[in-house]
Image (cartoon, rainbow, N blue to C red):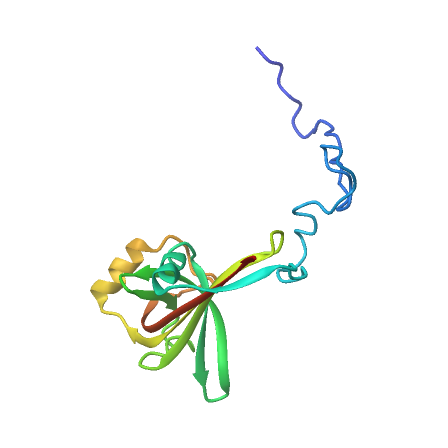
Length: 181
């Protein structure tokens, strides 16, 4: 039977050794920039790769990518100008749905044309994609709200009482991918 550890005492752990971003890789191939070095930098801080290609995505590819993510940005027009707000979203049939507060700026967009965007950027490999959706925002029925509550896999990004669902029915879905050429 193992002996019990004293309460309140921690055993010493060896200090983690931090590697230099230009240190020689374990294979001994010489100093080079390691993939993942600078991962703590803000997104978009890396320089573009020299030989990249910009590809227009089909609507089917865009819809497929939309279903792989859960955070995007909604842009709405207000009396004070455009506002862009990050939201958790889910794909709801052919539409997108997000939660907000009943009196929030995103709820006031009901009946209005809005824009939505989600993306994935990989600074290490210098590639990524972006999908944009434009469409009309609408309120949901109680039955739809219950179905959305059951399907939601994340709490709203901003927290709080965000139980008011808004659905965006797309009239246009476009996207682009940047990758090595």
